[in-house]
Image (cartoon, rainbow, N blue to C red; front, side, top):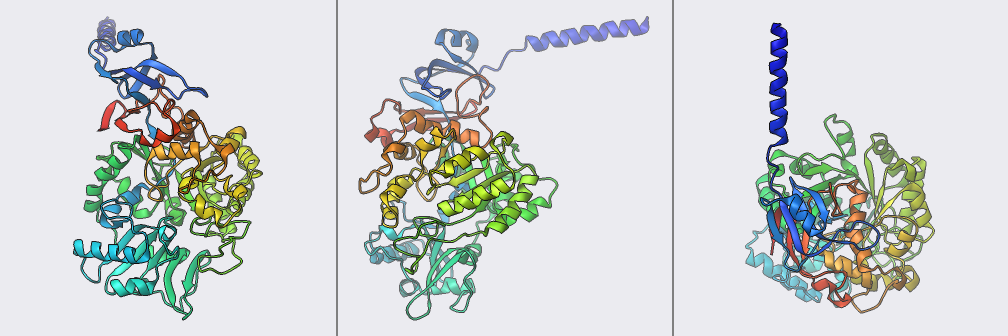
Length: 565
């Protein structure tokens, strides 16, 4: 009897609790309406009148009358006032960690610094900035966005020329490709490099007619310099973290990627201090050079978020940069090697056998493989290795080949067979196609970032900025995928041009798929994250020549505004 009474009381309490839970007021959420809402849900453009967000998720997308009933009177009314709303942009490949370092360097893409047009102006600019910033002698001077092709002389600055203006500072000009540097004598000495230093396999270290180093170092030859650069303290990184996130958020990105994360940055960005400050999602790709240390740890988790940060996969570097003439090609560069020698078709940065051995370890752990491969010979290496690992599309392993710039048509079938996600880089058709045409035929250059052909082959391409190689600007990415027009007005690959909607897919659904987030991001529909970007114009109806002028009005992460113009 006693047990029966207790059971009855317990049952009654359970019913009361269940009833209270059932009648607990739902979180108010928000109602988005009054503009053009492009869902990106499907292969053809679709719009809805309204979206209801609750608890950071989309609970309804459809007619406004029903949306109002579902939202309820307590929901925040977010009138778009005629603006256009899309799912938040997903960054397919950039270098978030470099954004933490830019504040400490001289950025030649910064209008406040100026864009020097010849070597004399470049040297003057660097010297002026060192004086203005009162950088003491013996300290580092790191210059970003150095591009010899933008100089009137169309040649690299030399160590001797840097020494003439800043002999007592350690000066490093980081090439726009981020695959090379020019260093002065103080920097070379700090890196313990001289004329007797061996050139590492996969590296380029040039000498002048006098047999002395010119200061130009590419790929593995630059590693001693880059590893010796002063690293910001954790306090400095935390101070820069807000600005780095806002750089992405103001461009409409709700998901960022760090495309080659070094061990120190992995530790920082996954640490509690950074986690408390993250407002957008961040996917990290630890560099293969730190692979053994990661494999030895039992607490490393890939593919799942810890707060707003996750380890996505391991990044491998197979070759260099086509604009720097270090991409590994099956064809020779007409202009030869970076030092002018002929014949030259580039070389692997990582030998194929070494890549395969490391990739086998990654694959065995179930981690995703990301491969930097620009030249068609490097892509061949990736394909052969994926085949050796037995990767097929049906396995759903989704290896990503970043850039895939000089892909041959025959390689598309291999991508489809393996299930590769090509992360293309349409900005090359604008910023670097003129340089590419000085090395290769128009037919070859016309097939870089072959979006149309890839889509026809059943692939799901993404499009990226490779920031800081080009500016973090989704509308230049969109425009370049549609126009494919160079700085001098030459169109490369007219048959590979995308429509506005197809271009937007590469910034949303394609990029989300490549990181296994197609059911969370990239579309506006019930159950997805309430990640939105609000634009002042509709990209689908904006004339091509005005696409780059579209402005972000607001960026929303899981229902919360993280940036507003």
